[in-house]
Amino acid sequence: MNTAEGSGAPYLTPEDELLAGQIADVYRIVDPVPATLVERLQFALALESPDFAVLRPHEEPALPAGVRGGEDSRTITFDSEILTIMISVSARDEHAVRVDGWLAPPGEHLVELRTGCGAHVVRADDQGRFVLDVVPRGLSQLVVRQGLDDPARATILAVTPSLIL
Image (cartoon, rainbow, N blue to C red; front, top):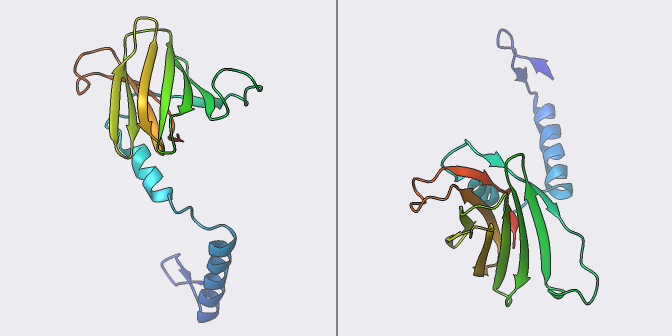
């Protein structure tokens, strides 16, 4: 590969272009771009403000047999310096789940679950507990806003990374 005079940009010979194309073909076969990558990036970037904490996820290991919740449930904790959210996700049927959640420190904040089918907004009680009874399965994200009545005016406190319910 040579450098085009004066530009500093590489000049590709026909052999270089053939080799680069073959390398790209190998990567397309061995490590293809996930089919949902663009959708997931657009979903994650759709929030209107960058002034909030992004919570780190910690999925709990599977519960031992006999523990309430059955095989089709999981617990995920998200935390940051200002807020922790613990959610328990339980299957309702093949199309929907139930999300039980708790905020720490507790507060009557607005909890929004963004999904591909739209947003589901509930208010946590004074103990920080919230329930989203029927939520479609698929890509989602939790957004916690300060406890105002108008979600459009409420400041975002924290968001989770995208997750698959």
